[in-house]
Amino acid sequence: MEITTFELLVKRIAPPPADPSVARRVVQGYFLTIANLEDRDFTYQLEFHVSRPNPVDPDRTLTGNAFVAIDIAGENTKLALTEVMPSPVTPVFTTRFRLPAKQTASVQLLPDLTRPGLLDEANPDVEIRGFVRLRLPALRRGVVLRPQSDRPVKVLLNPEVRGTFLPNDLTARGGDFDQINYPLELASGKGLNEVEPDRGFFPIDPVIVAEVAGDRPVLPDLINPPMIDLSLLSPTARAEVLAETLAQVDPSAENLSTVSDLLSKLEIPIRMEPTNR
Image (cartoon, rainbow, N blue to C red; front, side):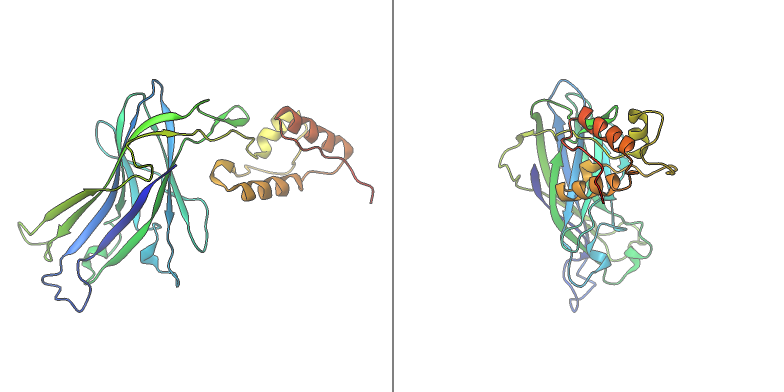
C-alpha cells in the first residue's frame, strides 16, 4: 500500500545569491510511526521510490546520502537500506523490520550527516524526494516463500516530517537551533489501515533445487550461488530470472523430467520436455 510522499533535505533555506549569514541550513528527515495491531509478530517492508533527475545528480539519490533507523522502546537501531530495482526513472530502496504484536515503532529515513565534508560545504544541496510504500512480504518457509497471513493485517500509521535548522557556525557555543515538524497526509486518508500480505512463490536458488530434486544437482558446478529474492522484483523481472535459470539446466530427458516434477510439487504450472532438433 502507498503511504505518503517523502523529502529529505540538507541545504540552505534560501539558495544563492541569498546572504548565507541569514539563510541557515536545514536538515529534514522522514518519520513513520507504525503500530502492529495484531496479536502476533510481523515483518514489514518499506519501499522508497525515488525521483531521479536528468542528468544524474549524486545529491538526489539515497545512495550515500541517507540511512534508516528504527526505535520500538529503546535506542535507535540502524536498518539495511538496499537498492533493489535500479531504474533510469524511479530507483527503489527497501528496508525490512520485525514488529512484535501490539507494539509501536518509529521508523526514520534520515540524511546521513557523516558524509565527508557535507556540513563543511558552503551551500550543501542534498534534496531527495519520492513516495513510500508499505508491504507485508512473503517469508521463507522451507523451500518456498509463504504469505505471513491469510488476511489483511491491521496497522496504525502516522507519518511526519521533522527538520532542524542549523546555526551557520556549528563550532560556536550555543548556536541558533530551531526545529519544525508537521504531519503528512496518508494516501488512504486514514490512520487505521490494512496491509494485504504478499503472495508466496518459489525462490530461485540452485542449492535448494538440488536438495529437493535429489542427490543429483540440476544446476551443476555452482559454488555459493547468490540468492535471488524474487519478492523484491517486478513480475516481469521474476519471469526473466526463472527463464534464465531454467535455461541453464542440462537438457537431458532425466534432468528435464526431474525439474518438471519439482515444479509440479511447488504448484508452478511449467513442464519441460526435450525437443528434437
